[in-house]
Length: 129
Image 1 (cartoon, rainbow, N blue to C red):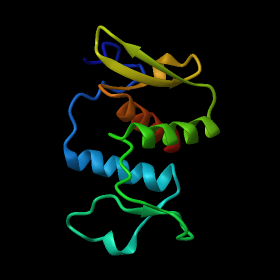
Image 2 (cartoon, rainbow, N blue to C red):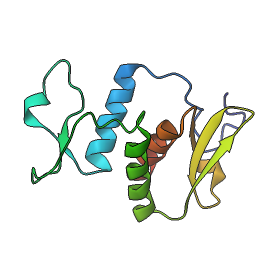
Image 3 (cartoon, rainbow, N blue to C red):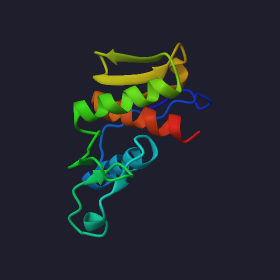
């Protein structure tokens, strides 16, 4: 699915992502949206699995992957709602996609084949402003 209008602010629906791209987006969301920091022992490990902790070290998260984990994605959506409201979620049955947007700003939606990924794309756009 591609955009037919060049001046719209939407991005193309994400249909394919490599595992590396998803991990990079998970890491960006963890740092910039959730305020987490990487656990020091996993920071440079080649098989890094997304071990995160809160800055004061009181709580850790093993394999924080909001792009694929619905519970983690809901926590991300809650953070988004703290910044911008109302956040809306819609599905397009014909296209098989989920979209997330603020209020009635459908032209600024972020869409993907799964709801967790659509939430993460929306969060990255929102927190990149």
